[in-house]
Length: 200
Image 1 (cartoon, rainbow, N blue to C red):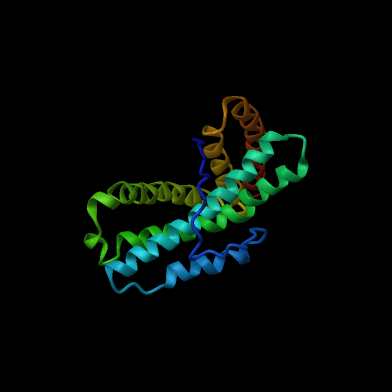
Image 2 (image 1 turned 135 degrees about the vertical axis):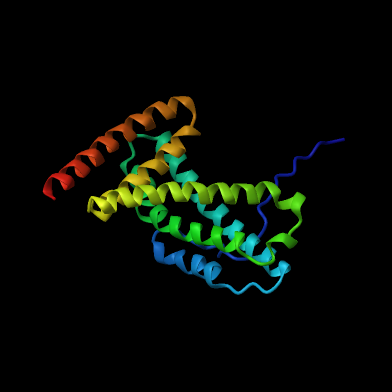
């Protein structure tokens, strides 16, 4: 009698193209726009919308995670570092407003209360928490806007917060290295902020 090992396979995508290569924001923006603008006329359509959103987020999170992992496996490879920081500076800041819109669209949907409470309770709790966090980021926006800080500097600051979030979950030996990098970037952003304020 021989034992066989079955390697699980990823389910086929139904919303995101299997051939999607994330090297420009314009390749994924239409997917977010579809979700934001899609009309939902029943609880079944709401669940389909949620599945499509979940698939898109899973694809993006996996892509971002692999960039982060590869960058920390070989810290001397500048290309790997640039690929990760491209995501943080060019993709992540543009995703955030859409994610907030999708969260609001979900909690305000008239079919929300028809969803299976036991099935979606934890997920919906996370969505509501994300809305609270996004409100905190709006406070950051107000702070920078009030002081007429450059938009690029503000976006870099928000991206830095995202990097810190990744560093929290990285292996301990990688975490220290990533935090050193983050501190250096934080210094640069602080200098930019102080420079902008002095010009006013």
